[in-house]
Length: 479
Image (cartoon, rainbow, N blue to C red; front, side, top):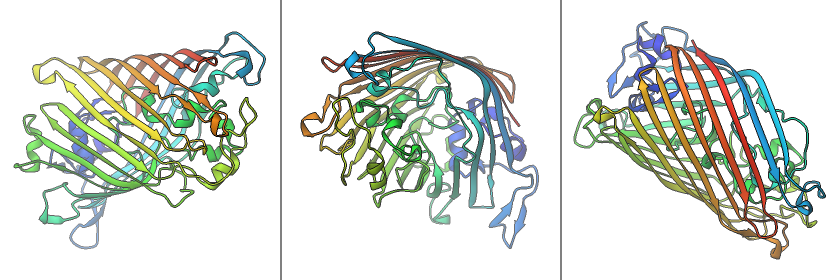
């Protein structure tokens, strides 16, 4: 999400960093890598003189209080249809499709942001979401959701989390021994450096499926949130899209040229992120295992080609296993009772193709990821899936964008019943998203977005389906 503090701090328009308010462009990427003090390698002089602490200006406070508020209102609607064999229903017995619908008029978001440089090297970014709708994140999927025999209206979820992100930079670790912003240190709780942002700087309202889905979402015969006796424990189950405790080295490298050469579109340059993570979302880690990840991307003439990968030796802990007491339709525990480990790997390429160099305001964003969990239910069976998305963006004017996206997931066949478990699945999921966004003012945006989604468990004799359609209309502002 665009943070208006920077406009006040430097006297620049939000469009300098965002192709559409909320979605970062290439200048925005360089601004972030600089610790919010330079754009395309060139210093941005603050309008108000910073307040120096100590000598030399190594540490200072911004001349204006660095606070912003993002808020807005939304109308939301979703209609869902679930179908499954009567014997596999939860509870069993009912046959035929079950249709439910829900709507809401709500506050889409009300978040406070604090962010600024604190001198020549240190900077920070902290987000306090006081209230937000979650109707288009963690949307229902999987055989567990498809089999639920529940009637009545849908209550679209909202959340009052208070805290979400706190990250801190130290730029230019090597000083004059390396080019500017080429070696930086970042630590805190924040999103992983995925190919396209999973947080509030993404363009669409709907989250990317491939970033938020977990192995258990696709193979558990019961809803994942119902597996654990304590909901807080399920919140620790790793999602790529969620903020993580992490520590990384990142930077931008301009081969054979000074860093400010990236202001020219014909200059090729590289961005990298290498770090470690708790892989337990924002919660404290429940085991000693930590994950490692890397993100590398090359940019040239508005095009980008990159790769992301993450590996962690263990996603589960003893508290998770003890709390997962639910049994499946066959009477066995879905999660094995006893100590076990389950590793996770996700990796894949991404590419942004832009026609902007040819004066055509169209871009295509692509990402494909392979994911594998080595032992998600504890019975010694691995589960793997491929997924990705392709989003076409058209900017008819500088104040508007029209976009369409196709998300897809294809899961391998999974069966742990022969090893004592109660999970058997062969999942497939996809959705289509279309949206329009228009800037009424620099800090006032209107959004309309529609989504059609389908999940299908292709297991022989137990096929379960979930289909839904929905839309949101929003007015968002920031100051």
